[in-house]
Length: 381
Ligand SMILES: Cc1cc2nc3c(=O)[nH]c(=O)nc-3n(C[C@H](O)[C@H](O)[C@H](O)COP(=O)(O)OP(=O)(O)OC[C@H]3O[C@@H](n4cnc5c(N)ncnc54)[C@H](O)[C@@H]3O)c2cc1C
Image 1 (cartoon, rainbow, N blue to C red):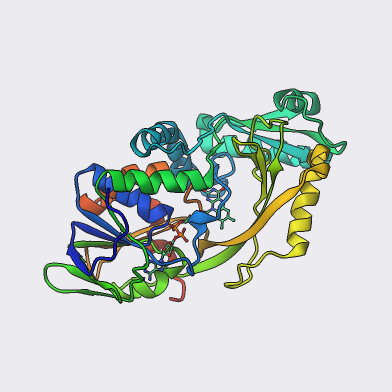
Image 2: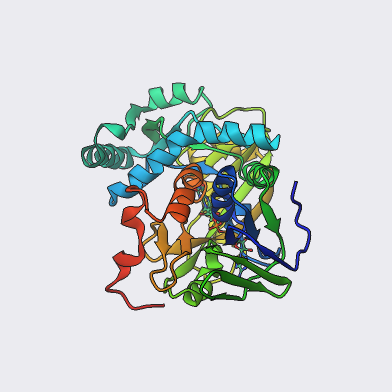
């Protein structure tokens, strides 16, 4: 196994900048094709969405206004069961994938009507592949195993397209599987320059220099200055999310609820995550945590007496329009940028489609709508 030993230099087939989920998924896919790969990662002081996220594999609420994005998420969702199993076998760590679906709880009749209309319209836009069914209060109660719904819950919906993983177990299993297949992961190697000669890119860090004919910039919020080095201009904005984690409870929620309540296998309940713009401030705030707790108790009153164990905030890397970016530099071919703010949902697809694109040059048709061309008329960063 290639542990994160400091290494002063090295030549690889691909160097990946950023060891979050996105960089590691690409790395994992590449090492499966027998390629020599180095992932250069920052350190604990960096923002890392991959180490503080909610773990939802969300499909049913992705791409209402952008059906190609729905298809991307759907394809990834379908690949997830096999991907999770493969990671478990290869790493010995179970990412605790739950692929049974998600329940949405509507509060009040108006919200239920809105949810009904939303589902009808989504189905018309996306076709038969979109699956989400409206349920009345009794049906949703039965589906959740009579856990005691709040009085205001009017009904809801169920989509079998969604799933979840334990976010930290997933991250560890992915890193371990990547290393087990021969990938190099170098922690504390902050890239400050990327230069190119006729044969290769030279990726520079204070700890040493690494070269490869291909370089992938997947450094989350650290992308924009590095992308400039290879002739690409893009904006990635920090979107803060806050999460509450409770003590372990015996009561079992069979499904993630409304995308903001889910239970880990060992019994802790995760509540979150919020969505706010607060610059690079990754602190929690009482107001937002109170709001999250209130929404949870409104839907499931039994949570009122459950103790909160931890809370945290973390920053999502968000592109200008919220959709992923998959772009090769035309000025410096062989340099690629990848950014997305649903890295868990898209993880299974990233391991399959991105290595092929990076090594063969042609973007799969599913990735095609997500280049930088779509921002052509906007001002550069
Ligand atoms: C609160 C919260 C909840 C979320 N919930 C979900 C969810 O339920 N489902 C879902 O699909 N997604 C979710 N996300 C989003 C998901 O976590 C991100 O899409 C994903 O983690 C992005 O991964 P990344 O690798 O691009 O970025 P990051 O995880 O931020 O990793 C970037 C890495 O790049 C490194 N880096 C930066 N600059 C440099 C440099 N110069 N040199 C070397 N390394 C560098 C950093 O050290 C870091 O390790 C959530 C995010 C948050 C914050």
